[in-house]
Length: 283
Image (cartoon, rainbow, N blue to C red; front, side):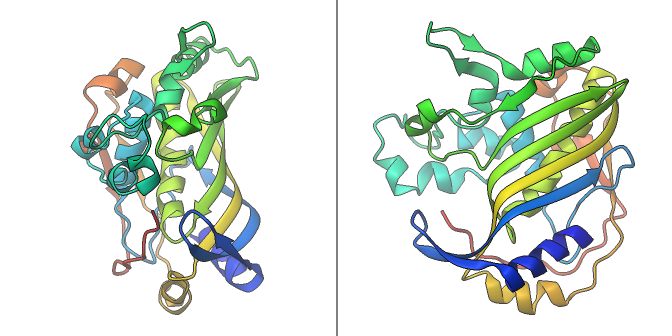
């Protein structure tokens, strides 16, 4: 919580106003932010100065790992985070690559599980990583990336958190995640949960110990219609101690993640929080 609150204060005190063309709103913007999560110590980075709907964040990362490309599939898992971008983004609605209602196109997990090659084949980045790590191999390129400029026009949104780089030292697994853009009041709440859970899950299914997760953000911002709520409400609240995350130990393989895992396989212990804050969402 301290590093989250410190970042919010820093944006408010040092940020620069920038016009955002996509949303038509101004953002108070800071370049470069680094966060760290003690995954091995199970210090779950869940926001306590407002209620966090953590199941939706975990459902979204599970959907990415499964390669989902449809908002309906994400809803079945337990999150509506893709409803707006799939169905209310006018540029995407006019895009000839859109297949119909709830279609997201070739975004995020689609790239991670079925990256298209010039030869017409596909690459399953995640399977390669899991296979290598399970065998104790780190080729210094255990990288899962969703960032494919050649197919931006075929999806509803360019990836914000775009690359996850795993590193193995002995039997301890580390993760460095890169994010080009972050809506701090809304998005970061989800993103930091997902970085933590991604390392915890991959460590569990590859038989490794979870170490540290490093979260690097390039453009961290607060939208102008979120500023008052952040400055005058959330930052006035005292944080609680961090909770812990319990993951079903029966999740042992990538196939488990792909097939039967639900949000019932995750439990947060000792979560104390303040009242929810309804921050505006920008499509």
